[in-house]
Amino acid sequence: MTITRFAPSPNGPLHLGHAFSAIVAHDRALRDGGEFLLRIEDIDGARSRPELAAEFRDDLGWLQLAYREVAPQSARIASYRTAANELRAMGILYPCTCTRAEVAAAAVAHGPDGPLYPGTCLRRGPVPGPNAAWRLDMEQAALLAGTLEWTDERHGRQIATPEEFGDVILWRKDAPASYHLAATVDDAADGVTHVTRGVDLFRATHIHRLLQHLLGLPVPIWHHHPVLVESDGRKLAKRRDAPALADRRRAGEDGRAVAAEVRATLFDTGISLSDAINQQA
Ligand code: GLU
Image: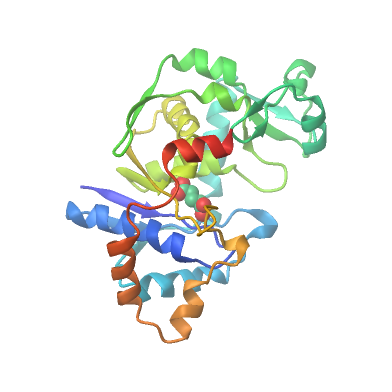
């Protein structure tokens, strides 16, 4: 059975870009008579505002998108810990005490998410302590995994190139698991068969594919949809004051009509894959 999910982080209200993402996932599941899940990704430390989850549920109801809610990330920390322990036992996680500023100062190359970690703590050897993050030893991990492929419904077959991210953090100092580890573990636990999300996360999938291999998890199909843009071409983002769905809902707008408009007019607009990649580069 086809299972898709919408996985918003409650660090700001949902806007039209989220409606689009939810509709893509919902309609993709519906097309196959499958199931559409809601998962609240609420482990982003200080930025997370748990009270927003209730608004998200109301927003989806207003848009007439039927969903089944699965456990929020805050209820799944034990499973992330188990996964991290598994990677640690394989000898491919190492503790890192560098600050963001230290990494930026020492980095000699940049990846899709910013400065590549220069390996300072890998060479230093284990420095146990409560204040360490845990990084993936990407070189060792990639060696173990060999060549991996994944498939995107819109963009075809891909060869995974997680090396471009360097030694990513999988366990954070200030919050439990990183997005990469948590989302990968969750999608497997939730039985997600089609991971639908914005094309701005396309490259992150290289890391997720590697983690699936290392952790022996099933491999879904991906569907990276375009990301809505504002008239000036920039990504429609909550931090830039895009109108919140909740405000439109409270103002009495018809959610079914909003969803219909999204379906009719927005499906093939927005940032393309090449634009998303250029923007990150
Ligand atoms: N929680 C992420 C966000 O709100 C989405 C992650 C995903 O769909 O994999 O941007």
